[in-house]
Length: 196
Image (cartoon, rainbow, N blue to C red; front, top):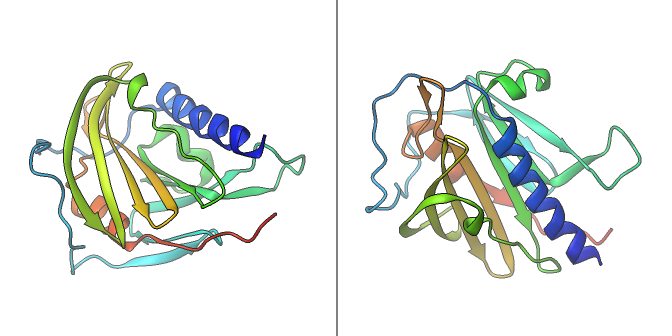
């Protein structure tokens, strides 16, 4: 039942994110090069502030805000889910989340199953596999409801990550190849959570 709830929660997060995003990002005419994969080294000139949920740790560059995700299975309104993290570009507080583009990181440990959402998207194009942050990644470019995404799924032993990057909103764009996006992905560290 626990595995089913986690899989259901993951699907809910993806579906909710798709339906809720609004304009944000930065003006950029870069095009995605879906056939060549991604960069595998974090840019050296970007620095960030560490953010640690207890399971997911990343460096958050200037101009981005890490936002902990509420634990939807808890009765405590202040409980966070350490296996999820949102990092919003241009946000000043968590109240800004729905007015900004963001990266969604979802973790799945050895005792749970991560379900791919690939079949729920349109115009899916696979990207070349790559390695980063100790994970082996596969992924795809896709669209839903007029929004474009890059979604990557990584494996490291029995651990899995799913990272969704919104690529457009209104006349703004945020590309997977952007240095700050690559910096965040390359900075990811994970810790297998203790049993609850």
